[in-house]
Length: 420
Ligand SMILES: *[C@@H]1O[C@H](CO)[C@@H](O)[C@H](O)[C@H]1NC(C)=O
Ligand SMILES: *[C@@H]1O[C@H](CO)[C@@H](O)[C@H](O)[C@H]1NC(C)=O
Ligand SMILES: *[C@@H]1O[C@H](CO)[C@@H](O)[C@H](O)[C@H]1NC(C)=O
Ligand SMILES: *[C@@H]1O[C@H](CO)[C@@H](O)[C@H](O)[C@H]1NC(C)=O
Ligand SMILES: *[C@@H]1O[C@H](CO)[C@@H](O)[C@H](O)[C@H]1NC(C)=O
Ligand SMILES: *[C@@H]1O[C@H](CO)[C@@H](O)[C@H](O)[C@H]1NC(C)=O
Ligand SMILES: *[C@@H]1O[C@H](CO)[C@@H](O)[C@H](O)[C@H]1NC(C)=O
Ligand SMILES: *[C@@H]1O[C@H](CO)[C@@H](O)[C@H](O)[C@H]1NC(C)=O
Ligand SMILES: *[C@@H]1O[C@H](CO)[C@@H](O)[C@H](O)[C@H]1NC(C)=O
Image (tube, rainbow, N blue to C red; front, side):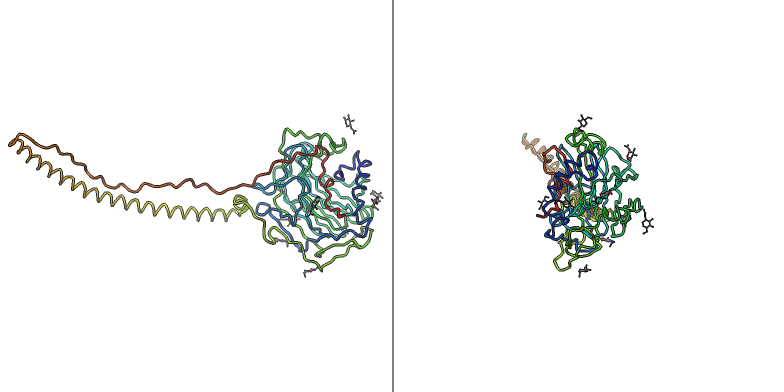
């Protein structure tokens, strides 16, 4: 298991660098020239809005747990101990921008994170601690070198758990720059990262995830860094990602390490393979539930739809009312006729009675007459054919995964970039 490199800077790294080395022997391009190529993003600009689209397996790999979709986007939720939903892109970028709109998770010891990670362990981080609703930690690593304590830096953010913010990293060969809502908060120049040696400079994929740094089984340093032990009784803890935009400055279709230096100058940009098939706005989006589609619609579109549906209902209602009134009118008319008939009948009856009375008088007997007046049709009764149940499916989470309660830095644990 490999912890967040940040966490690893604390107590545990002697133990974990050992397992890390063992874990990554097979295809760290620093040690091997036969690692498979990294699939590149292939387009200059990839955007996915999780209120409208879901991740597809082609583009995103859920390396731990599963993501669900709610009103605000993709939810990464810790329900029970061992949960640590995490995804990473199957594509890599070789410099570029990564913009993520997210709302971080509350909860002591809960870590929300955005990570750029390369095959030789260059890393760029955003990390939020659930017990701290006013700061974000930025960090970086070169070649998995965790021997320094001066890389992490905290910056204020206004209520990251309460609202969405635009967290963007702009990454070139010269510098790394972190932005919050368009404000530059940190610049790392190449030369300032140990003369470039610790500067992230190899193709990275993008990872989003939540994990319990405060899990009681974690090392003390990790728990301390995460702000204390996690109390699972207060779950769920949810990080919500609304939107991701990634640009790839190199625009290749594959990136290959040309040697074992891990230097950006050694990376070969190939452009001869088919680019990855993207999801999201730039291509066919994955199927979504009606509810998600509805939620994803712009407000004005919703108003238009409400207006149109409302208008149709109004027309239906008007037609109905018109028919009904007509029928009533017709009914009234009929009734008048019937009343007239009745009156006529009654008159006739009276006359008849008079005759009968006269006859009874004459013959001492008479009939009993019952007249049923015909009541006019008061209008067709409105038939309500069942409920108008809106088809709002709502795709809810599958059963939470019960798992290993032990350490869980999915970014490390899964390390999907290993290519054996
Ligand atoms: C891979 O290379 C790095 C850097 O040269 C080194 O620190 C690490 O021990 C190597 N890992 C293995 C398994 O050889
Ligand atoms: C990226 O693409 C999105 C959607 O296709 C578009 O709205 C946005 O303007 C583009 N951004 C850049 C920098 O090209
Ligand atoms: C949040 O983190 C910042 C930076 O480490 C620290 O100054 C602040 O006191 C923390 N706030 C809370 C509530 O822990
Ligand atoms: C790791 O980083 C430290 C601090 O920046 C540096 O002194 C050391 O030389 C680095 N190690 C390697 C192998 O680059
Ligand atoms: C997010 O911030 C980045 C960096 O400042 C900026 O380029 C981008 O346009 C912002 N996104 C939106 C949607 O405003
Ligand atoms: C980074 O380099 C630029 C010039 O390339 C310089 O103006 C800037 O001050 C440097 N930033 C830091 C934090 O040293
Ligand atoms: C962690 O801290 C607890 C209490 O402070 C202590 O009992 C335990 O031995 C520590 N564990 C490690 C691995 O340092
Ligand atoms: C790769 O090919 C695409 C499409 O022809 C082009 O837009 C892009 O600039 C090329 N990339 C490189 C690195 O040459
Ligand atoms: C997704 O990640 C898992 C675990 O890291 C890995 O075994 C699998 O090969 C990955 N799938 C793809 C398509 O990369």
